[in-house]
Amino acid sequence: MKHLPQISEAEYEIMKVIWKEAPINTNEVTKQLVQTTDWNPKTIQTLLKRLTQKGAVTYTKEGRVFVYSPLVQEEDYLKQENAHFLNRFYNGSFSSLLTHFIRDNQISQEDLNQLKDILSQQGEKEDSHG
Image (cartoon, rainbow, N blue to C red):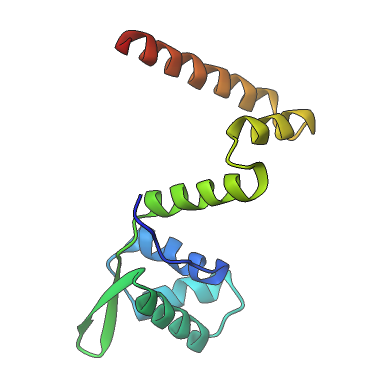
């Protein structure tokens, strides 16, 4: 997996808007985030500039407006973040993470049933490839 830029929590909020709406201009990003955060427009513009400098987004200039598109795909970013989380807190072991959630009753019966289904389907795939 290629190395992706580090994105702060605030930058991630902006990326979620860009991933969902791209291509999207500065005014539209600002309008959405002013409704869901307590940020002022200058803060949002600063965060957009940082994301551009980090190589997470690119823009084109249309008249007086910048139109943003992601250079980092959401799925790739989330994979990297999940791997980082597992390595940092569970020594890269998904089973340790899952055990922690199950033992602390932080996982519902519905979630457990879904996991059983996923594991069952994965086992069937591996059996058919074997």
